[in-house]
Length: 235
Length: 299
Image (cartoon, rainbow over all chains, first blue to last red; front, side, top):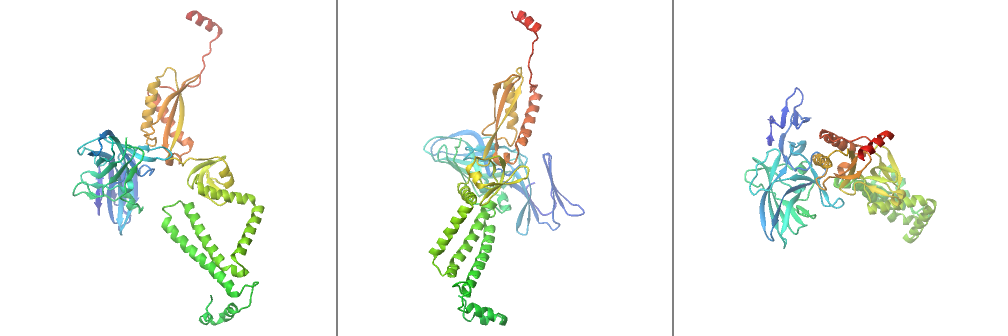
């Protein structure tokens, strides 16, 4: 399903169906997913349609721009570093690319949505919540439902710290797809309360395609490279 | 300010006009025609600059700021430009120093203050609201007896749109001096529900069903986790209180009735599917003979 389409689109599996219907009038983009239908007419001299995963914080409503991944607590000694593989939920974006412009046609997801509060109600933030297994090698995931985050956690604090969650800002997310959807990130733990998370702007493996980010398509200016500072704890 | 040979560039029909401007004859008190023209040109120039500045600010900041905040800043810039233009050119009208102008201005303010105390109070409270930010446009608030979404904060009133689409202007004095609840101030809001089950029903099972059902509801926050506990042993039922946290940004788009109709019917269905019944209010009444028989049986 992921890729760039100049001509026809036709993808159907048990959960989702995406196709381009040629009618006597304008071509029509039609998508079915989890009992929900989306339909849009396209201009006849249409450009390229791109389907790729996007930052998973937009559905069912854009209530947050932060993704929180919870996992089994792991104890890290001072100065220790650990590479982990976690899963994250996927949202799929369909874009119309023409004349140097990228327009969002559709957004859908096969994963279930849950929100959470990171921090206190007055000072914290709402996050898109996801529970992941803790793996030291690439886990098996459903290609259109979950992606894989390669996360390197470093404990820079002078004490042993239990880490059981990581919060990422979608403004600095960079997703790539090949056989699976992947991103690579880092988490620098400064204390049991404070850590910084970043997502690398490089594909985790060679040959992967870069995804069009939603903030790029929506022309939302973002400051990148800073990552997200977790100030309400890592466990 | 007007070039001596300016009139030579103008069409022939305007010769008289430029002659008047260049003359030394005063037209208003000690003010010359050239000073009047300078004043008008300066104000028009400030107005044009203000329009250009407004256009630039809208393009630059419309996606970064709330509409009313941006409008306020644009208005401020435009008013300041006009005031600057007037301040530079008007002293010539009076042939007086800025001190005298300031004196007149203060006098006028004093007159207005006496004539319209309410207006001044509302204006000052408007400034205080903007400075303290107890709410901004788009927030859902309750001020006095009015609840609704803040549309704008004008210099004299706060405009609120109620859930039934009525626009209410609340004087800023009332808003500032009264109690205001802002439902958007925090990112999450708690809602409480209460229901009763029969005395013979399994309380633990009911609580398990309720929390399990809430866990599957996407707008109920994972943390703080929903709570369900026995709050009262009432006449007809065991009361169970349910505490649920929602993202404010979502909960504020729902009215209280919608929040109840989302959750409560689902809980009822889930409980009934497990054989747990929400009882009607009931009372056991014993008649005289029955009471005697009961005593004998108990005795």
